[in-house]
Length: 292
Length: 304
Image 1 (cartoon, rainbow over the protein chains, first blue to last red):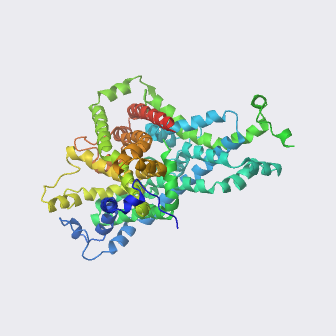
Image 2: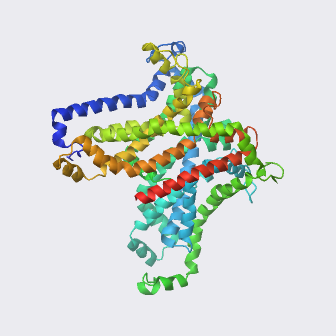
Image 3: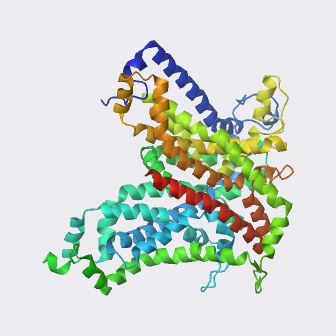
């Protein structure tokens, strides 16, 4: 059994009366505050179970008298939640796939194939980290309305999100650093066998990088799932919109209990991802903290 | 065999002169997709943004150069001052209410031994929720009648408040949402920094007679300082870009008290179709954000 790391208080101090008192005081405080943090989830769940009279009744009646599970079925059907989830998944998964493919190809080139001027290229890629996308979202929108040279419009088209989402200097940097740490011997052996760069990339580099690819995929999935501004601009057709864009406007004319039932259901998928990926979450967050 | 095919790393001068073009081609082919998406969706729009700010932009016809007139119109608009004043207040509020919360939480969670992972997860959950979904719930919490906050106030016999309809409270209400949505991620970063502190430091301090508070003051906080500096700048950068909360929750009101530069430029561009004027706003944002970005890069380099 692993021993628990000590904190600022030593084990001896923690076991003393004062230490225990402090511990339980802090514990109680953190517990109370964490209840406040998860309260909106709880509130959405229970308010979504109320009937239409209860939801407007003043006073602090947190729990419904009789849970109206029907609200959830109603909201699911009336708002076509399934369709919205499907759109969100399509948008986020396509973006993640594009980002990982394009970034890992570029990172492999910079780390292993060493093009002339590669260092400068990396610097130019990284420049985009310092400039928030919001500053050029208007010309980006106009670019998507009519792509220069190709003269095609990506409005109301998932490619209009997948392609801009594929841009990630952060992923390029992280993958480049990772690829550089893969021992040269492995590459030498493959080169002796006469494997092409593309073959080495797909059969050696990518399989060896599963862990970092998974973390990057998770980070960008959560980020893209949450994105609001770009899908709002690109997808004008309601049937294509992801849940972040569609739900808020859609529910305005429906009773509050249905709204909150829908909101709660919309909160579930990211939470499932979080629980599944808990092990990687921290590594991912720390990686994310480097992002500028 | 090796030495004949692979140029020696010890002779970089020779290596540089003899570029092996056959290897350059795959190298650039691998780079090509990234170059294309960056060119289309980052570099080109960035340059265009600067150009647009000096143009009268028309989506159908020809755009015409209008010199500085977009900037003059922007500065003449009373909303310009309002929006930036609001951002200044948002930032102050979010620093007062949001900046130290994660530091304190991390210090406390770090002491929780076996319960640490639990708290870590719970505080992190809100960061995963898309803002528009969270706002559906928060709107009900802040609702003037039957809203949760006012019901709470009623229980302790305090007058109900118009949280989102009162200019004095609306910004504060939004900052609370932002803190809720962001604190958990920051807590993880501080926690990791705390766990990186070698235990020997605390043990040595104990031997020197440092009490728990002194250990926090002289060991934990100084070890967090560099992270705090970086996250301070990141928080400012994030707050300056606030958009969805005022757009959906308050529509910039009441009396423009929650209007932000991003929201204003969004309206000018997509409701008034004045892309030139909106670009002048964007360039202003770009300049402000770049200043903080440069500070951020400088701070993180200095600390690493």
